[in-house]
Image (cartoon, rainbow, N blue to C red; front, side):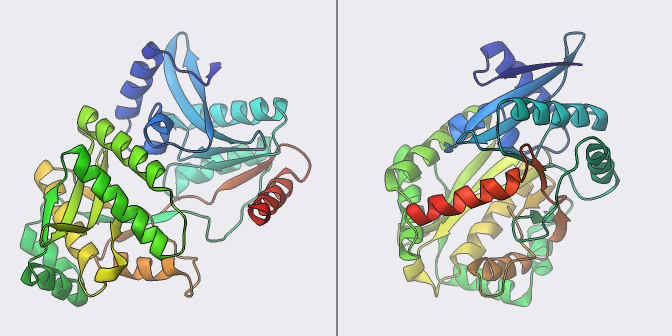
Length: 342
């Protein structure tokens, strides 16, 4: 197996990796080639591309943070567990040589035999740590296949059905967002939601990101923006991304001043109806954190998502590799110092 590293994919490599990405049954946009150019992140992204006799066998996008911590998020991508194993081992050695403190690996598969095989095989070669905490990932999946709209609605909790009917009764209207002005309006609402929660989310950064994602969607036909309107004013919305057999709720907002309106309920229901028409069989709620504290706002978001009665889907716990002695602890310590300074 040969491994090539690059932080600047050529046009030929981008085409090849995109084709490979689309050939796999379970993928995540974090591993889509050049996704960091679409949804801007503070991390630098480096690619490890695995080939055998000039045939692409797999790849992984690795997110680098200040030359201290490297992260694999929902990867690597390959058709073979053994290829994935070899890619991760090469990533370990690469970042060890570069002097990074630690490497985090979140596999892009469900817990089960395949994940356990990879974990055991890795641990034999390079021991790592698990932390069972709120940083581990899970989501909810709702099967849309072979359901009518009425059957879908009946599947939800009584409270959700009531709120969806209330949204229609209150004349809330959903529509696809097409123009740049509409995307900017979506972005402004998203930023305002965070501002009212006391979280700084720069409006210009938000607009640039959402416009970039919208352009990507238009080019690749891989999702949609949906707005929720009251008297022609956008009061909420949802961003849905397609990835193979799943449509994922990627981001969304509802304006805090409209708490009595079931904005998110109708946004997700209308999104599901559109996904059903397209023929994508599963709706991914974009995360469910079973370990979060009941005092955390995420706990309430979990309860809301669970009301749609999706099935649990858990990813394996993140693996933490110390590339230097106590590298993970040092990396976490430096991040805490940075938060205190900022």
